[in-house]
Length: 237
Image (tube, rainbow, N blue to C red; front, side, top):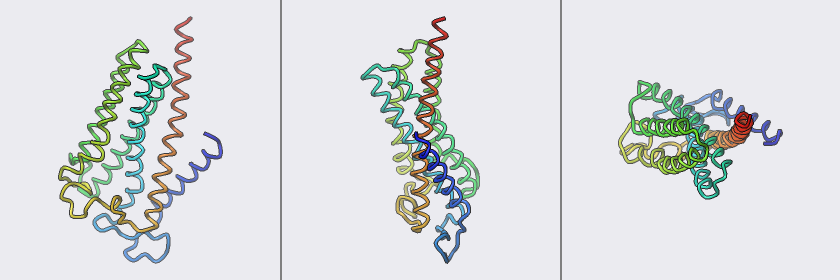
């Protein structure tokens, strides 16, 4: 990634964080930087600007891992395995961040950090699935066999991601906005119930975290390639 793009992403996300935290929320907005209250969420609505984009970046990372797993099985090029595991590792990190931001939201909305709501349960299952992925990789020493089994696993795991993120929480009743039977409908994000200025900050955050993922991904792939090269040199001595 070019230097100017790195600077742009840093400035972009800094502006998003400042806007998301510092812009006041008013019952009657008086200027462009006033966020209006969202019924039932009030000040806690700020978390939407961070929690949802991080969750989205998690999905992107896991899907990318699956795609590179498929490409590896077709081409048997170890570089695609490195790309797959790099994306999966970032997906796991983002999944943890999504869980933490979601738990903070739950504490202030529902009274406790963890309630085994379908949304919380589904993301916990994803953490277990991808945690097991790395356990599998660490248990296999032979490179080609590890890459093949990991690629198959990443494909199976990747298929479950849309179900656990988008389907399961909406077909079961729960506390999270958008759950089955929720009187508020699909939630403020999907129904665009947020004010225009808040939507702009939200989509800016969505773009920012997506680009941040790809930046981190390129760095992670580079690191994995260097580690593999060093390992090959060590093994040859």
